[in-house]
Length: 306
Ligand code: SF4
Ligand code: SF4
Ligand code: SF4
Image (cartoon, rainbow, N blue to C red; front, top):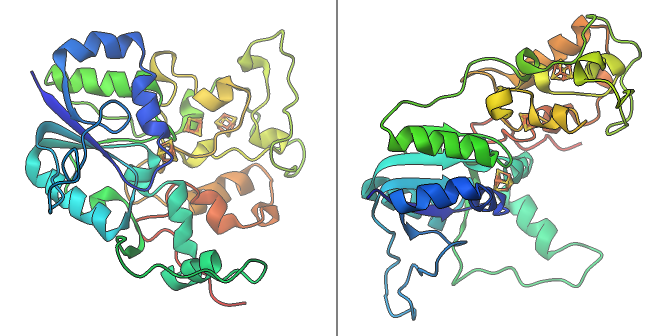
């Protein structure tokens, strides 16, 4: 029976909850899998159950799964150890694949972050911890910047259906990957290639008749509601393909990351918006907005002093 070890680094733990959220699929998979380390499922500690071990011990398994980007030297060490201890290494979720939301921290230097947290003028001066905790890395890294990764499952969080599909392929020895298409390619909304109005405030409700199907609703961007679909990889919709957020009446925020390796979503989005007559300069904080989930891989750097 294949063994699985899941490690989580800079995360909100939503990805682990998505693994549990597979529900009945997880129950069907469990007899075929043996979890040897997973913080939300079992109590296995790095330094022994009673803290009796002097050195941190990373589990060995057939499959290793990492959620979260690399933010501390301890994360880096565990990623390197896990890589040595497993045959297949999977990154799960936007944080592990592209840095995710925690990599927005890459807009600041490590010193700026520490000063902001411990020396905010409006709070009492804190003591900056200097020992007994793992030091921060200079920036947040995606896991594949540090170790070789065999399979990447993006999303914030990835849907339980996508996780189940990828794991089932792996168990059956079949290759699994997501298509190099955009969210727009699977979006059923109506497009006329021209915006009705310029960009509106974020999170305004779209103009939609809920008695009619999505195919009767005009594209979010054409309604002036910013949607990152044109520059985002598709696949979140699972079997029926309709992108998850669009189905839930929300524009795409870009959590599946770039359509292909090396793509630059900010440049692609500026082009897509301009091509339908929208002014992308109206978007505040464009750098962070278009790189919201992909701040590793040097996509985000500290901003110059104003
Ligand atoms: S990818 Fe999203 S859900 Fe998963 S750990 Fe990161 S922030 Fe949480
Ligand atoms: S921009 Fe958004 S709403 Fe418009 S087609 Fe693409 S995914 Fe759909
Ligand atoms: S629609 Fe966009 S933001 Fe929503 S789940 Fe899919 S890729 Fe992520």
